Length: 266
Image (cartoon, rainbow, N blue to C red):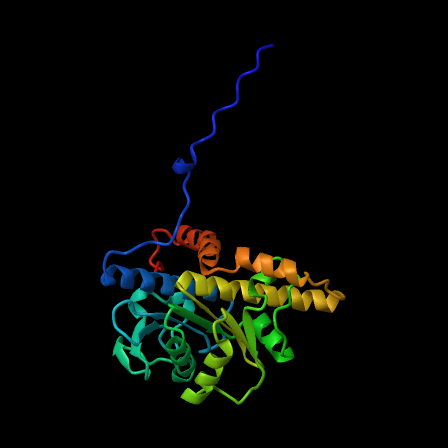
């Protein structure tokens, strides 16, 4: 019997692979960031990260120095649209929008953005497992492949001084963050940064999941850590903002498809 030959491989240059968009103008970049910011907040709401009026993501404006887009105070994540977002300066003064912002929250974000000019977005909410890990004063341990993305690339703010309402507290957090992608705020929660809204959102989602796994594994027994050499190698493969952006895309596409044609698109 004559066998049918296998199909020829598709040329690599014809295979589709999404990469971050490149925009030709600040207006286009601003519209894109606002859409992704509103969508990330909606996804955070869907994942249960909202807790009362706590929780916020900020995105640097691509044109106006020292200005940032942020979710308005008291508006549910699940109902946010790009039109609801508020533009503020480094002092938290509203430049565009009709709502107040969470001033206590922005005191932290402003200092992180100031210390890290390459950072586009900062994410912080009072997620359940992040708070549980923070209550223990623990870092993310390299006990899973995903956790290795944070290996030696996040810090612990090992103090709690009440609700962060001033610049000094924000500076302490920014100093602890340093060049890392994330911090655990003891007795408070998680904070992540990224060179895009997508990257910052993904690092927060991944860190929250790593916290959940670590807590579950610790409750069940003694987790076996990944060795230093392998943890570093895995971080080098999985720990970049580009990988975070790529990892976030299935979640973003799923959300867009679920809300396609609906009024609750960002």
